Length: 463
Length: 82
Image (cartoon, rainbow over all chains, first blue to last red; front, side, top):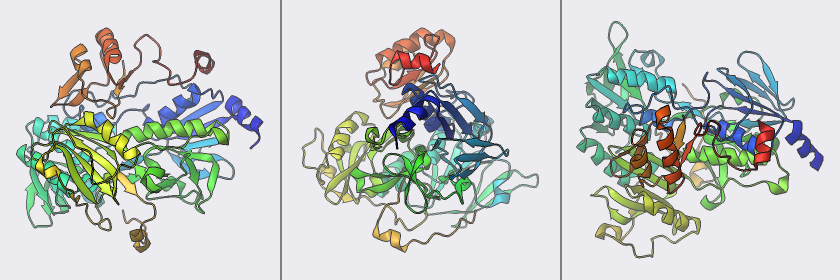
């Protein structure tokens, strides 16, 4: 690409960002901060300016923040044309054009796709429409759920014990509301952290009064004659009466609008290189289409070049900044997105944090504290290397473990720790579920080469 | 005033909860709960909390009537962009 082309792009080019949430906003700010002076358009399907989602399942449900006011602060003036409340409906790669749901079209010289994920709805549509059946992803969802919790339901039923479902259960208990949680796996959080840590999370829930049902699935939702949800039927043939049902079955990536566009986009996200440039369906990197945030799927050198899809707040910020930088500079100045995966959650007063990619770990070793005290650091090992660490109320140690992971420190760990208890002396199986079995949304999707992948056949989703 | 806390950075030092208790609160031993839309009368306390955070995890806008600290780049670029 001739140098003057990039200069012209920076001066008077047209950049379109599809997706006006955390990643879209931070990308727009970075473009302006790095001197992009051309035309900038942000397209978002929700009618609101970018807002923050983590508080929706925490501060908002606890009544500490308004669900209508979690808008993100701006770090930089973005001076953009905002097309809010209208979804992108198609992409013409050859013409460099995004088609909108209202029929309008927007031309670009560079495109950033940050369309993220949405909540996976309850698959039976009629049951999903019952009054009292809720999702928790958008601010509308949060406002609705908060209103229902304030109204004092007799019992809340949460389907799925991932992070979001567990956080909802925690908020319910804090408000003194009876809550039942159903989980297909043997414990909460197993998809993200494995069965050993899941058992700790299970203890946390039951001790706080959650009616936790594991190894069960929900078979149907029953409504009353006026269309309000009344009861939940489970695979063990039990029936639980509830007037609010929160469907927390993970997420779906917003890539349908790219069907037929020629981009390498599908249910696992949009594949891109480490510089955030999207691949087309042939696996050839595009020059002018970039991807960031939850919808992106990019290779990570530290994790065996696995393509990682990360539904992590910090990833959205870091990947957006890298994508924006790379969009407006010469090839040699481009940076790779090699962010260390990290996430947090809090439930039942316990702060849970993780760095690295726990689901890649086969073994787990408690290196600080103890599981019984629910105050510990656990380290995950993969082929003799430290691949991830998780902390329960021990966040200040995580940075140390992050450095260890970055330098490929050996596993089992060799260093002595301050307060090692007997259970930490040897590694145990981390106990992740069979990856070929369906689970609700993992926060990390591993989709690079693995022998198991050769067995996978994709069928179109039925819902 | 809008604010956001990068909870990956937050290590539970609780400086913000001491300095602006109406905006930030500790929940359990080390998790932070905050109101992302602080009232106007919290302006000075919020500014102090932002400055006091040992890991610089708090971003707020509207603290001095304009946007917050630039991410990168120079002031010259900022004025071009506005």
